Length: 251
Ligand SMILES: Cc1cc2nc3c(=O)[nH]c(=O)nc-3n(C[C@H](O)[C@H](O)[C@H](O)COP(=O)(O)OP(=O)(O)OC[C@H]3O[C@@H](n4cnc5c(N)ncnc54)[C@H](O)[C@@H]3O)c2cc1C
Image (cartoon, rainbow, N blue to C red; front, side, top):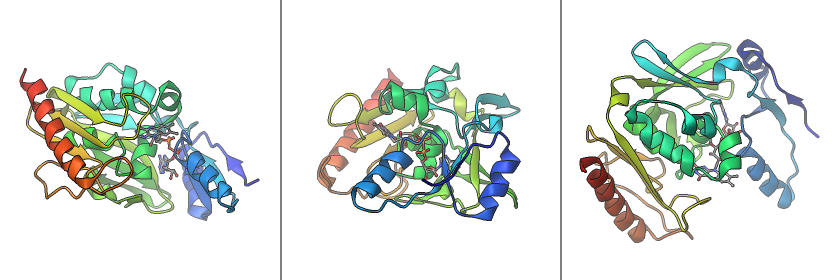
């Protein structure tokens, strides 16, 4: 059994991370299935777990001057139920469609971004919102645009000693109505084959059709063939979902 720490202050968490050897966990809904998979295949390596869910600064949604701040360890359930302006409708809809109620209660928006799956439902709505991520380490803080943070399939710009602390969304972006549409093999508890977020200001982002979700028109989609759908199917489905999202916003 590896060690486990659950600090209640950000400085303590960052000091531990600076020592090295810790695996960050928030809701655990990505890291634990991945660990179970490793163990099943004969690699029982146990990490030292750094649980960040007791750090108040990492939770909650608030308006701060000309932007909205979302703590990285804010759960999908908190996002789903939050009273927010219409630009967040797409993000709240994605929260309603992530896994089931149990996953929404445990899983966090920060975990979704740091896990950096091409099928991460939180990414397209946050690209449309032009979100920035705030990273902290014992060395200091920095901010990056979301599209500069997620670099590829399971790759981010986060250094090993950094925590994702919060997301920041310009308040002006949060005013445009927005929608989120997700295509899966069934209606609930499903990984996206394609998902689309769009707002009334004309920004559209497509996920699951390239290593990293991207703004529509910002380079060609490069969907892969896998068990969930062929590249050709994903291309066609993305175009259809974009058209439906735009029609819904126009209605
Ligand atoms: C049954 C099931 C259904 C699911 N359905 C969906 C779905 O429909 N759509 C979808 O997008 N995802 C889905 N997921 C995946 C998962 O629930 C989400 O990606 C969730 O948001 C992950 O958040 P978490 O807090 O549980 O992350 P964790 O598992 O705790 O962490 C994920 C990764 O991020 C790192 N990390 C977490 N927080 C931070 C932080 N603040 N700073 C630095 N690193 C951090 C961890 O080290 C780890 O590498 C599903 C998972 C399960 C088990």
